[in-house]
Image 1 (cartoon, rainbow, N blue to C red):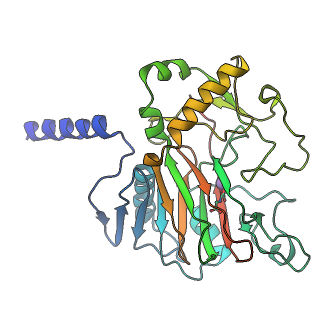
Image 2: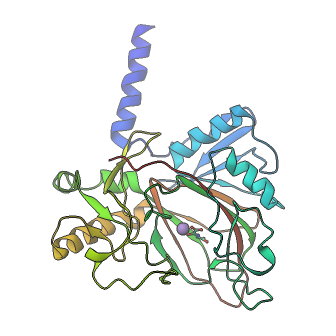
Image 3: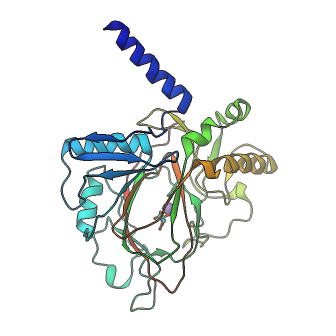
Length: 318
Ligand code: OGA
Ligand code: MN
């Protein structure tokens, strides 16, 4: 008995050492009616047996949280006709939700949505203004709102209307990005902090009230450790935010740029990536602490409408 327990601990350890905590297991896992099927990539999994229209039992919630920690991004497929209220309720089961800014991106006919719902869309409303954020442009690699002191821990994005092609959303595994760095680079960045510029959104638009940054050393935004400890898994991951106007505190600008280029090249390696090709009724739940995401552009004349919620996070611990 003791021997078998010891063997189990050893084999688990080996698995962790060899593959890292966040690696997907090759096998499917089931629990009652729920099933998680990891992608073939280093993050991402489908969850079956959850209906986003219904309240979550505490068992299902625990199962989802474990699958989320293991796989970083979860996809709930076939969730047709989920209302904004139901999406809010589902998201709220995973934590407190941030409210969209009063002067946020919701215009026209969508103002009656719950304040926890943000609209991501290129559709133009009756008033001639976009009804949501991000247009049809590419959204460059980023972590959501890392320019604030307490960035969100995760987001849920639900597809209501999708274009025939394009507008896919990709994610990278930032535990793996960290694990793959050389020991020398790991040592170098161990105690460094980076300023996360708040002036531009992920499609490169200047935010209201900000001026164009000409020198990253003057960027305005939160500063966070480059290496963060994930509060759930206790594993280290790289925390980069976005590349534009990023600055590593205390370094000469050229050294900051060089080091950031190295870290960004490591993090956006296609091997670390999983791409969500949207189907109608897909909902994606991502961990905003240990992933970055990017969205492809799409034909501006087609319609894309997503509802999005944002789960409140915690201080970034290095
Ligand atoms: C976001 C985002 C990507 C997308 O909502 O934070 O980056 O696919 N969206 O719309
Ligand atoms: Mn985003």
